Image (cartoon, rainbow, N blue to C red):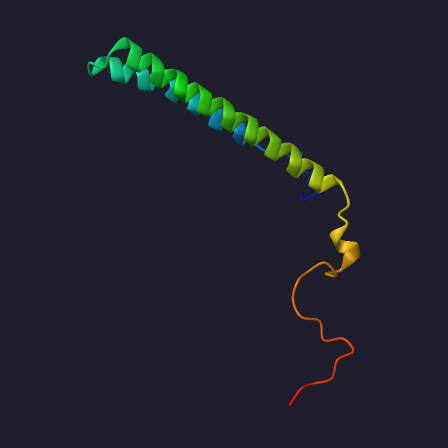
Length: 100
């Protein structure tokens, strides 16, 4: 007995930014611990941790901004489709005669 198959529910896209941030936070903790383990001073390990936290924060801000920009470009109609290439550079041969 074969009948109509139920359509599967579309699954949401995985949040890859959160995965990247989780790994970055893990690194912010792991790197100073390893540095301390191998004999680096506490101040050096703390400075490294602060640098990693700053870079991770900046990357998070840029990734979220990129996601918002991509979401807005998917929903907003673009003006480029209406212009049909009139803003592009290059030669325009309309109305000119060929040169020998």
